Length: 166
Image (cartoon, rainbow, N blue to C red; front, top):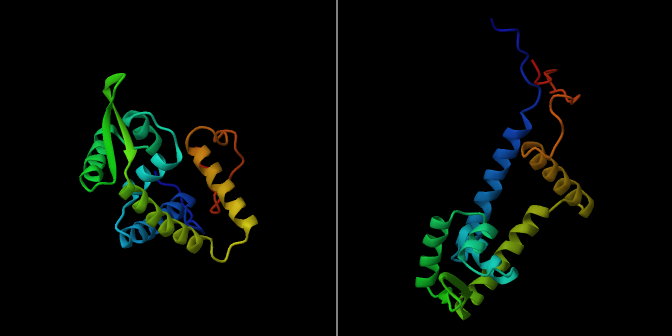
């Protein structure tokens, strides 16, 4: 039997966050595409530029994509001259990935697009608001990964009065 369910007074935060993430992600995709890049290419380039990764497996973990997907992107990046891959002389099973001169140029071009996109996102927010937002987003992530609030013992109540507990 269905209870009388009150209509929410506000959209669930997860829906708002998902829609916002999609909108912001699309805008970032467009900013990178305008400069001839994509988010996967940017993530690989920035990881190679800013972190010490010894091989493709470490690169995949740092970028957060599966090995086969990474290989697909690396193949394309190698064919366009952005990276080189060579076997590690001490362990022939390991591929070492490095930026080429062209990769450096593309990195800097995409970095400008990423910085401009970030400035656009920050428009109208104070530094304090950005810090607060980052903290809130981290808390949301912690909530869904188990590092957040104890849902069963929470006193959280949805704006429609539902506690989420039956």
